[in-house]
Length: 119
Image (tube, helix red, strand yellow):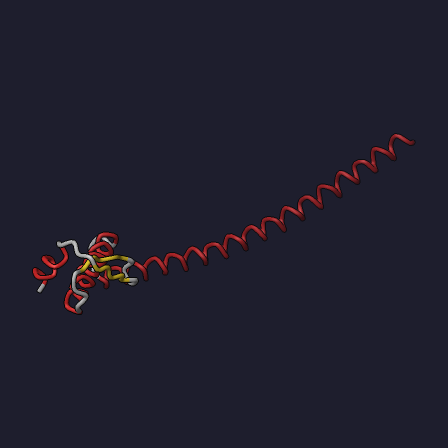
C-alpha cells in the first residue's frame, strides 16, 4: 500500500484537498479515502521523521530520563539560589552594622575634634 501511495502522490491532478492537521495541500484526481489516508500517512511519517531528527533518534525513555535529570538540576539550582539569597541578606545586615559602627566612630571623632578646638 505504501508503494501505491507513492505512485498516487507523484501525479499532478486537478482537485485540491487541504489537510489542516499538517498544513499541506495535495493535488488529487480522486478524493477517495484510500488516497487521502495514504497522503496523510506519508505526511505523518515525514513529521515523525523530523521529530526524531530533532530528538537525535533517542528513545522516549531516554528523553524522559533526560527531562527528569534536568528537573532535578533545576531544583538543585533553585535551592542554591535560596541559600545564596540568605547569605546575601546576612552579609548585607553585617555590612549595615559595620557601617553604623563606623559612622558612630566618625561622629565621636568629629565631636572630640570640635571639642578640642573650642578649648
